[in-house]
Amino acid sequence: MSTNYTQVSVLPTKDQLIKGNLPISTSYATAPSINAFQRVLMKANGTVTAMLEAYLAEPIQVVKLSENLTTMKLDFPNINLTNEEQVIARKILLQGNISRRNFIYADSLILINNLEERFSSQLLNTKIPIGKLWCEQKVETFKEIIASGMEKANELSDYFCIKPEANILFRTYSVSSQGKITMIITEKFPESHF
Image (cartoon, rainbow, N blue to C red; front, side, top):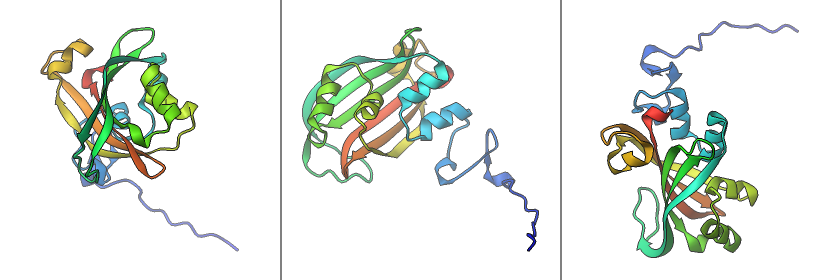
């Protein structure tokens, strides 16, 4: 028995390319011209903390800017939460433990009633990044990107030592566990840092 091989071109056509010769999918059709690691930060559904630690070769720590328990109605595309929900509204920075440089600003709405008590307790009482808590407690999660793009840094510029008109990239995603939405997270990072 012999196998016949046919030579086929696997290169994308010219209209299927974006900067860096990455073939596009529907998710990349409107992507700005960004580098490979920026695309990873924007589109990957893994924990950003682990990606940063690998890329930057330094541990990452959380700097809590604010954390408040409140009740609100959440209105996001493709997310059906019609009742008012008890949430922790949390704003943090992911900062290099050695360099003390801020790399990511994150704004999170955490649906406290959809989390296990041990997880929410550690989230409120420690400075452990959410991604590390998921790993430590072996929490199974599903993350879905809701929005991503580029905007001006404006009032976040001071955190990153950049000008207010500098670009920052952002992504907003929902996190589900055991079939329930547990968090809506928006992460923002300066284009110039990566």
